[in-house]
Length: 435
Image (cartoon, rainbow, N blue to C red; front, side, top):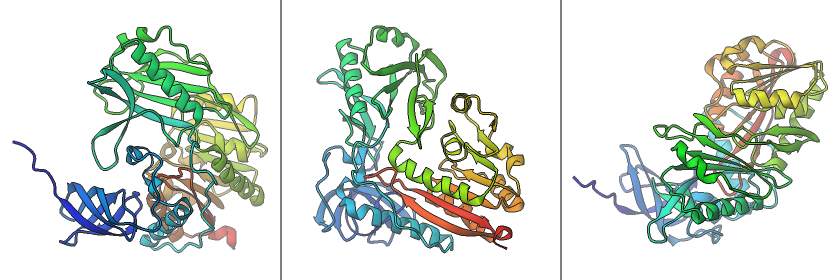
């Protein structure tokens, strides 16, 4: 039986919401979240989801345009690459600040926010891109692909205006090689392209079929570090099952003058200039605290802790990913004041103490409830909480405030210009410290 198509409806957009869409109301008063539409606009919307209390879709036509709308640089693919290309860049900081304020107000957390920070140029800042693959039946060629927001469709792309020039060049050369060798798209799952500030590109090619690795035996791309990773075809995500062709080297970058080794598959911030702004603030927080002990949970390859607290008596890094821990050990070198623990934060509660500075930079899910509960009980004097998800950060901050913490500093950062993503840093002091 053919699935019934959803209707096209006229929607007036009221505001931007945390997910990055414009939000309006349908005639039956259901909220409708719309990609490609701005506040104040009237749009014809193709619904893609319709639930009991809400619906989702994308704008087919803008009937009444906002004065803040601009022409997207990538008109055919911007919903896949960076859906806020349609918003005047000067308005982006204001829109994201409003989303931050509203997100925390929903949790009844009152915050005096610092001005939202964003860099001058909103393009070519990303040092990491992850693509799928697309096969065109007419041309019989493979291309890179991204998922179109608001749908399950993939969109063929040649490059991204968000990516560094080095990534765009390496991606094109990889696709040219694939098509010159007539390699099929079927065994190719995805690819991560990651560039250092000096222009070296790490390429992690994920494949569904081990046999295809031999097709890349003579691949030569200048200034590239290449690896092939087998990923279980039954897994929808590109998770490494086996390294078929290991990388011969690692990427190298500097943060606050300290050098860091990392791989294309490890966690490393995608926008280094803005990240360094955050690191400066956290370093000042550590120095102003006068502490001699810092714990950095969710530490990755060590970029926060080692950048802001390398000169104190004791620095503890806690990370659950084994590969990241190995790279953190390399980045620590022969320093004797650093302890590294391979474990999840919720299994490392003994490191949360009633002294020193605690730094947390959790994944989008936020901190585990046991971590929040232990912070509330042990009350480290200073907590610096960096987050890529204001919703879960607001949830966690609410609980800490209810348990005796005060917010001393809060600021949003545009790590991901032209996209809906928001990074925010909040510093808390325990009431015992304030007394």
